[in-house]
Image (cartoon, rainbow, N blue to C red; front, side, top):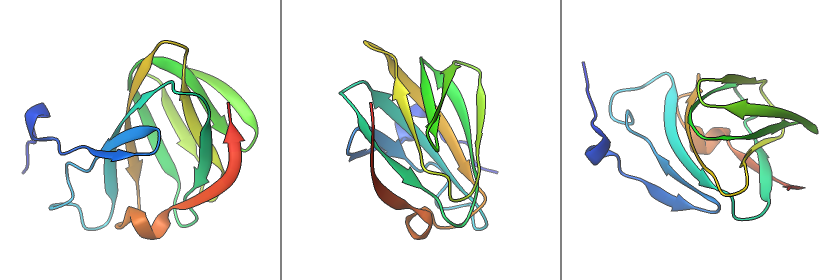
Length: 120
């Protein structure tokens, strides 16, 4: 059993977001990320070709853009993103969001592709 506290989250700065992988040492068949987003303009969509993604909105409001469709999301919502679907999450103006993202794939870098689709 593992319990990782907030102070132990090791966030990495990525374009338009910060991401932590709190269970990297214990998950072997899946991956989990805690992602913090701020509205800094548009974002480029990405996709996960080998697995679906489940997103839990832990804080904030915004939109989940999935293959050209926009869906309003807020704290407590769960979003299912099919494997291979281009997607991005955009916080509402002046808001930050915290997401918990789960992937039934063991190594996210092998399951991540950027696109050239700008989502604003």
